[in-house]
Image (cartoon, rainbow, N blue to C red; front, top):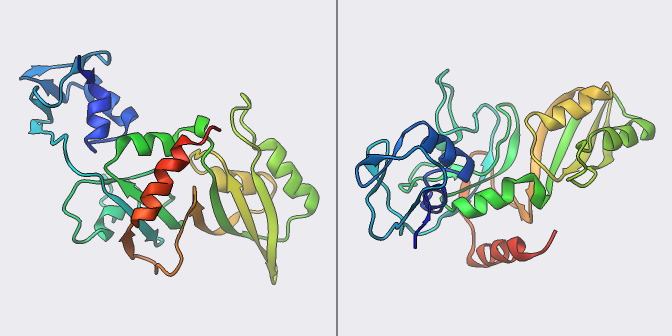
Length: 242
């Protein structure tokens, strides 16, 4: 019967489903020696020889889940044309291929999940699933309650598919303020754009929670495997209707 090729690549940990589709369209994937460019093609991962850029995939590879406390100064990609350090440079000793779930800006820090479980990555990053992400944000100036309310209202997507962001003034620090901000989608530079829109640019940005995952005592640059309980909770989290 077979599975869609992009799903096979995703489950094998090659890339997210969206990236897998890009690889197929680009002609980087072959099945039994034949280049496949159609997204609807199905294959049998147990019997067909599926290669990406000439390398045979290992479909039965065990699933890996890693949690990194990303420091500033690392880009959240697997490679960078400007030769900046990437978050993969921090995963010393990890032999299996994993990739980051979502992204954090170069100058941002905090919770970053890695996995070779393409289905989990797809679920956690797709806006329709409204997975919460919480950030601690240092901004210039002290936002008024009116501005914080405006930030929430103006940041909801036009189609109304995501929940309203949650924001509160956590503490003041001289002429600056620390905000706690919870989002339910992961648009590029979203936090910075939200704060700049109300006239309070971001000075420091740290993600403190992704879904139910937190850093606890993990130091910047350190990573650890998820515990069996966390992996179980991750599976349960994906089963909860949203």
